[in-house]
Image (cartoon, rainbow, N blue to C red; front, top):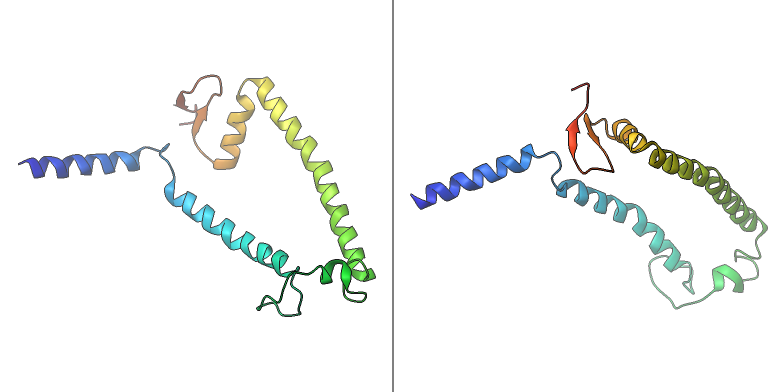
Length: 146
């Protein structure tokens, strides 16, 4: 009889877990971490191997600044095309920061001054969720269209 009660409580607990829309999204966290590793790890490996002494991209042959400054023909500082590409990268990065930071700051300050309406609008827009949330109260209630 006790085994039946234990199975019933586990079943109820599992069903309650799937009915709760605010549960911790473990699968989503796992997918996000896997995607970040998949996208960032090659860049990290490329940066590490840019300090390799030899031409091999597979075998580590020692630590060197050859590809950055030491080689008079193949280094970034001595090749005009590489310097132009690096300058273009920095110009693009600065442009992105100059555009995105004011827009993000404006959105954040405006949503804070409205009293949560901007936050609710952003939550509905980005997640297509039919729930509203107020930063002043931790209550979650259905929106008017539900």
